[in-house]
Length: 417
Image 1 (cartoon, rainbow, N blue to C red):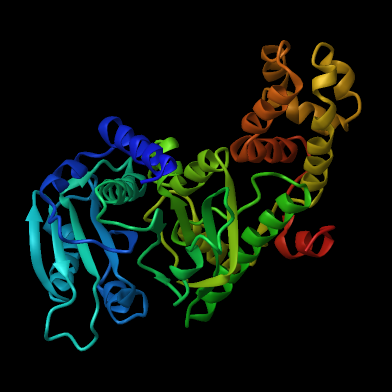
Image 2: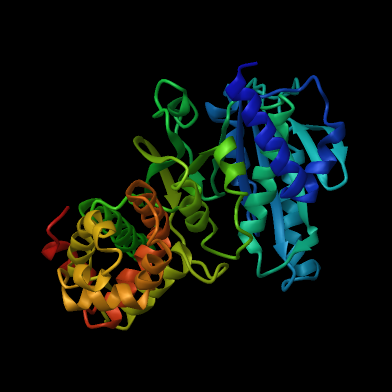
């Protein structure tokens, strides 16, 4: 084993010892003769088994993959009437193969039984987090963390070969090149995460159109960040995300949140290396409105549908906020030189940008970095002005007067495509 691999294993072991979820302890007796090339994690709440059946009959299942399905349920929806969907899903997964190992709330379903028409070396690891419900406020973030932590544990013992954890959702149709695109010769050396291309689809026209508008908004936002030359210009969609095991452990895993867990994990990962976009790996997503999470695609789509029915416009960030952001990021290159008198640096910016930066706390950051060397100062500035601060800056500009406009108008007027 190389020195780099030894260090990676040590980092993973430290994470597992101090930060991993209790489910990982149940893997102590996992069959040592079992090993898989890839690992895919999918949280499932009130889902049917269609996504598992899709996986079983896909090219991916023929590539030796362990599919970890975290069947979860929030503790604010207890009772058999809420549990039934989870029970049905577990039973349906078991019917896809045969259970070869069980421990606590884990069950391994081997998919290579003799009666199956399609031969595969893959399996499904079922995690039961519906009998022991997940705290509602930790929601899907905890579900994803449980699955990813199990993947890290199995990687550390050699049961998983690939250093990539693939994270998706039940509504995703994963393409045949999903795993192969993550081989060493196709991913940048410094890559810590990847975001796949995507599109939404629904046979119901109203839902399809609402998703299309929201998708346009997402692409417009990332295009604006690219235009501004932000180092945090990437999509934050949980169903299109993959990440390196070592980086995941260094970032201490998924945050336990009921929404936005993908955004905050990527925000931490992007400070450790490159987040790479894979345009050739195209994931189809079922377009569906949802209120199962407080914000994200589902609620946004439902909001767009409601606005359309009421004859109102769906508004989004004015392109001027990205112009202001670009000017601001370019000006950061000279901030260190003015760290002792930052007020002189501020005068080179528009009044709106000056106020927005003050509102999000830039003067406080500068005051704490007065003795830093230039390289260290600029590095800390990039870490401080991360994707979350970038969003706060954009919101501050909006609150100061650069109001959102109709999405289609914003796209038409933007100096980027």
